[in-house]
Amino acid sequence: MDAVPEALVFINELPEDLPLPSASLDLDGIVTLEWQDNQKKAAAMFEGGSDYGYAFYDNGKYVAGAYKASVGNGIPRDLTSYLTA
Image 1 (tube, rainbow, N blue to C red):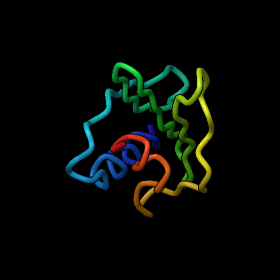
Image 2 (image 1 turned 30 degrees about the vertical axis):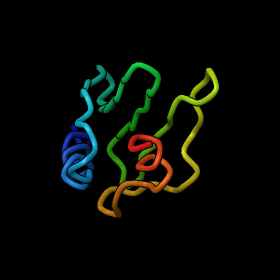
Image 3 (image 1 turned 90 degrees about the vertical axis):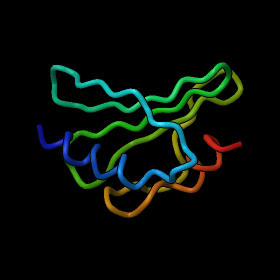
Image 4 (image 1 turned 60 degrees about the vertical axis):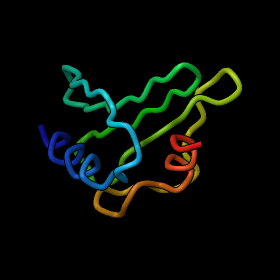
């Protein structure tokens, strides 16, 4: 359950112009936040550590984010750019 507070911090850091993601909690405790639009798909995954993974859909496949993502350090630039483009 350590991942839940981390996901909440992430959501609170989202810029107001970004849509809110849908959330899911896996049996192993991983929280996944997902955005799905007609052509845009992205996800951020929280496992209970200070770092989290994120990816977005590009050219028919998911691509891992380019930056180290840590809870409390804002939303990675490439994820923000992807979701607002």
